[in-house]
Image (cartoon, rainbow, N blue to C red; front, side, top):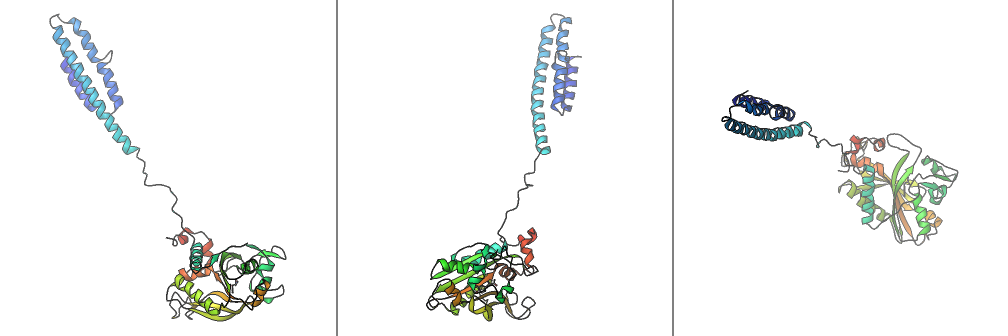
Length: 337
Ligand code: DAH
């Protein structure tokens, strides 16, 4: 091949190269030991002496051009290759598998809210054992062994005298035995009953409130509950007392709120009454004060027990208590934003 032939085939071939590997092969083909250009150089000896310098200079010039062309083509292909790999091997970091952020359970939310309201009124938060003695759960609260009020609560007994507490009221006697008035205590916690349907669960949560001091009246109880109700369910919420019976309070009341769904006009949720029952309460029975060594001539007190799930069901319009415990994300995601 002549210099001109080599140059034109080289130009044609190198411009067709798309891979670095092809370029490498091409380099060997032209510039390698048995390459086309090397062969051309070798043919120099067949030329007349006077032509050799010019020919040699031309071949060297061509070698220089080819080397430059290889260098620039290598650069070009490396850039292309990098670009191709960046596209082909791209990792989509926007599709992460990070777990979504958690939030507080609605029962915890309501429990916290109520406790915060109580703390704002000067109450102290205390907790006690879930495995309780018959004494604190019943007897100290004026419910002896043979008392019919035991039937109000289906109890999980562990032994004859040890049980899973059925009410946070058990904390009342525990506290009053140890501390003397003035007392302003709130006790949130789990309670247990052998009961299960859309509005009853074998485990649920209560918050017990207890105030004992001189001159405590039913008005103090009402004021306290009105404060909680208006902050938890809205300013317009009204509270009403209905006579009831609990052995540990005298008088005892059932506390109703104006229905948050219809505002008291009457709807399906409140069974057309305009009121929804929230909790039990009353003035601490003097018998209970005396059981705990507190002089009932000097001191009076009020107590109440809120069902936390019940409060959450009323606040959020939840129809079935079991929804709280199924851990269905679709349910839980609606709270705690
Ligand atoms: N312990 C009662 C229950 O679980 C609720 C209750 C009623 C608590 C009256 C009280 C109270 O403190 O005074 O049904």
